[in-house]
Length: 111
Length: 114
Image (tube, rainbow over all chains, first blue to last red; front, side, top):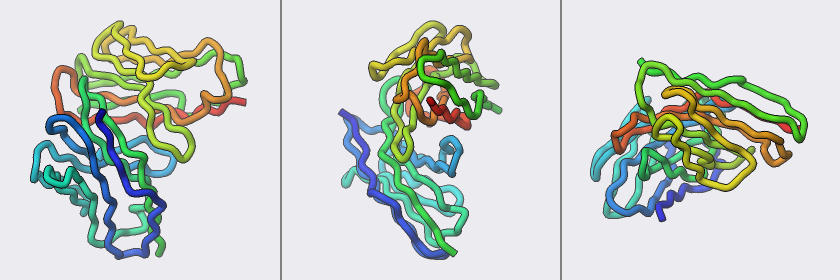
């Protein structure tokens, strides 16, 4: 079945460092891919999405490119801030609008 | 614009008591609706989803049930809560009848069972 694998956290960075969170997937067909962010005590917010191969999703300085050949959708940000501390989830869509989520990666940014 | 509301935000219940969590969506019609549970430090587990009024699909066997009495209302219930039902419950919606669309989440309900 469909699955999403994310790198384990926590990932601890200093402010202004470069962030990469790896995400790979297994799916039949060509799903849409998403990154969600969850701040402490809150629900999930859609961060960015890509619907087909080679699409690049971007938002708030974050980027991810849909790589069909490597079945990956890695999240990157060039210069993180303390306010980027959160849990990040990679996901792909399944039938009936359902999403398959990765386990989540906690990111901690220190001043 | 579309909005999703969940309540209550926090709930403390004794073991064996009933449960009712409510979720409503505004600004859209015939949405797909979802209930998730997130245990502490863990990922999301899809509990139920619904593509229409009265249509509920369960993803995992459990002590919980869901109902959709109206188009934009989704209710999560239990007759007798267990300690293992503790967690963070999230409701979400996505556009009905359209594939490849993201889900949009409510702010969640933190449920503690004593």
